[in-house]
Image: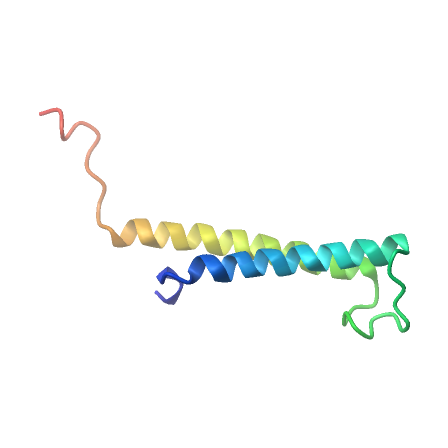
Length: 88
């Protein structure tokens, strides 16, 4: 799989950081710390809530992608030994 390469960790970390930035920007607009001249012009959304939601969805996607990648790596290594196989 393409996501099982060495650079998969950087891609997932980038997705998490990007999602976190979207949440922070959405919250800063909602609290009034950042004033956007035209609502939705820079963020592509109509409200700060939509930006925060998109950031959370991005972080959840990155976590799910990481879990799938770890499962595929484990399956690529081969079957796990039986629980009592080394005791015999």
